[in-house]
Length: 540
Image 1 (tube, rainbow, N blue to C red):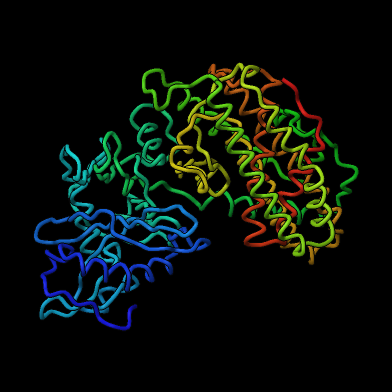
Image 2 (image 1 turned 180 degrees about the vertical axis):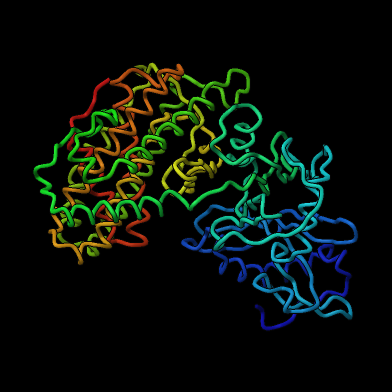
């Protein structure tokens, strides 16, 4: 909070009509406030200045709030936009965790607050979605109710867990509204895909679209501020579920004194039906875990079939590979790879042992890796590109008994909003989930290795074998459904080539986070890169 209280002689309803006050608000208050928020994504860059690029009022039945679109300009020559709703309260206790700054309006003292922390504001938003009416024209805020929304009144609201890059609030214990903090001059892919799946397909393993809030300030595009969905029953996300399962798997390895070297091995990407899994493996992992991986594969395939079957809406119709995509893909990957090379070179001193050896191998083979990316030739691709999840991993699915829900279609955080909407190879989603399997296995090993009688080498060998079986079951189920429903993702060699291509891309992408946040985990993507580069490359 600023040392001095903000002051404005105008009333709350005229607060932002004063340019001098807006400058004081941004320079003295908001620049400092947003840096401390978990949803602020510019922490690794240097803020140059912040300004209010747009503001609008949200008024309903006597209540009056503001919506601010904040433009943050960085010294690194780029900018980001954020959504911050403003409210005013006279009592500090009412502001709670949303307190921004003390302010005096005329003769009235009080506090500026992030309005999402006010029950009165949340009530206004919910009621305006329920009562939504068609709105046209630039500069207007549009509230939309989905066909399935039957609510007639607001009863309650509460935050969903810790605040992350967005703010999620549960309404009436039955709906979840995700407020997008970082916003773009375009519809958000999460809103776009969620609404499409609900209104245009029979796919029911993602949360049902219930409503939205969009701002009409860009011609032909709405700025998505919030997405309302049906709250789905669940027992937590796939990541926590998998960690629990893997703990049991490795405990069984020790308890039954299983000889890892005696377990039947398979090739990476070999496809095996569940009924053909060796009994020794089932005895080790348990059948239920393998069945759930098969179910997850089926839901993934059903999602791709649902979104790839569109023939009229150009935002979702499948597309052939072409020269434009070829250029876009290679430029993006080569730029990303060079960025990760620089990161590895600058952080070698943080590594030791196998991690250091693998990082040095990566640097020595950088030209080979570039060649893998450059070898992509769109002329050879016979399959089609579709809209994909884009950031698919275990944390993006919810466990529902023996089944799963897919969620969060917002896309890869580092990508631009345009890139997130590019139709891509479905293998990108498979690679994301497979890399998540790999991460969960090693996260478990790191946690238990000191209490296990097995050597680190044996645990790693067991983990890599487990990883291959997870992939084999997933691929067999996924491809069986895809082919039976005529989604053209290419012939077998093309499927394998693109899967290897995407796994390499994903593992290299992961290096950035690990070296910046937890270098001790860099061995996970480094092992992934090593595995792909030493696997016989499929040719198309």
